[in-house]
Image (cartoon, rainbow, N blue to C red; front, top):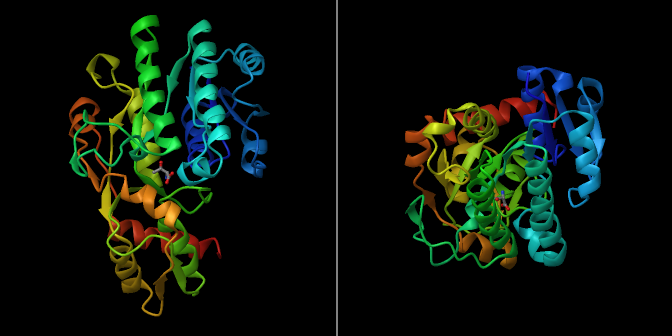
Amino acid sequence: MKRILVTGATGQLGSELVPVLRDKYGRNNVVAAGHSRKPDDVFIDSGPYEIIETTDSEAITALVKKYSIDIIYHLAALLSARAEENPQLAWDVNMNGLQTVLEVARHHHCALFFPSSIGAFGPSTPPDNTPQVTIQRPNTLYGITKVAGELLCEYYVKKYDMDIRGVRFPGLISYKTPPGGGTTDYAVEIFYAAVKNEPYRCFLKEGTRLDMMYMPDAIRAVVELMESDGRMLTHRNAYNITAMSFTPEQLYATIKKELPHFSMTYEVDPLRQAIADSWPRKMNDSAARAEWGWQPAYDIGSMTKDMIEQLRKEGS
Ligand code: AKB
């Protein structure tokens, strides 16, 4: 059985990926590693948890040796809005962290998963039906680290014959761990307000269309890509994937069908609006569909119903 290390394990994606990987590959074969957010009991109870800085090469090397790691899911990163507030820290975590992990993976013959993002595109990218291979000149620090990360991963694949795979995630919507510091976070916050019967002030303006995905689809995408036959993968570490594309008012209208008393107004945050305006409205994910069978299961309607049901169950 392969042994796995997940960095950024307590983040929005990691906290849902780790339990799925543990169910699939055995709880002691999946090491969760994080640093800033306190792990909830699920990590402590269900398998190994380690505290690390992803820029600390010695610590990561020690972990990889201690657990005989074969695959690293490198999720630790600052999201877009937080990265704009602290570009130096974002460069260190997103870029130096990735380079450190790549070097450890190279020396210890590990495969790697690296999540890129719609943030890897910029204002000169075609915003509709955004091709798999296109102009990538992002104007955010987050986006710069994502493009550089994609290219660095590709370099390691070619130069060192490593197995590195990844996707460009759209905004991720989930009910277990809230995201922190992202531009697409409104699409999560809105549900918490709606279920609590509180009005919501949206920080992106009407008409801001962005790609989105429900977390169960995102987790399945990661697992399916990592399990797919490597010989079928041409684009390898940066597949466009999407499930739905909507504006704040479309999400609001969909939630209102379930919760007619819910109300939303707008209070635009110029920083996050500028970031959103530089991102694509809808990516073309045909390469992922053709090369490893990517297929989303949730659309805006089914995601909305499930989010509300799950948050109600959790009593949020
Ligand atoms: C963010 O908003 O920063 C992230 C992303 C789209 O990469 N959710």
